[in-house]
Length: 124
Image (cartoon, rainbow, N blue to C red; front, side, top):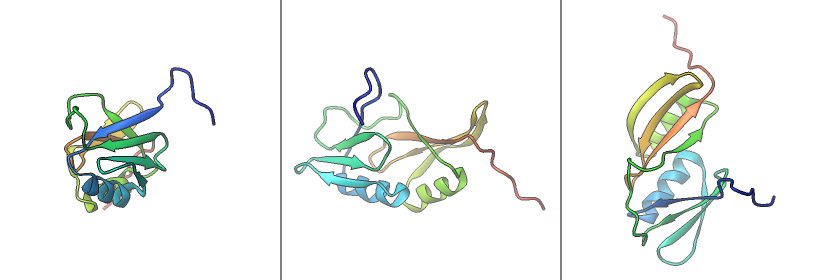
């Protein structure tokens, strides 16, 4: 597939520890990685190319652009993220297009996960 003119092409996350970032994102989402030297890691199998940059002048943040991932099963994604060791920074909430929550990765970057499918509460 070619590049999309003016389309999102690459997402780069600042990292304080590439090994911890690979362990977390691999466990939480099944992403794979390729090391490009001692301080840079390329991200694969994430829907768009990306990387972790441990030598960047940019610092992890929860105040910049928000990267939002999609999930077919929001509850399962939240459980996977928690199991992989992330902090849920904003509990799941409804919005007109569906439902989402936010989390912070091991370096402190805040991302979100959303789903268009409603979450069914257990009857009882």
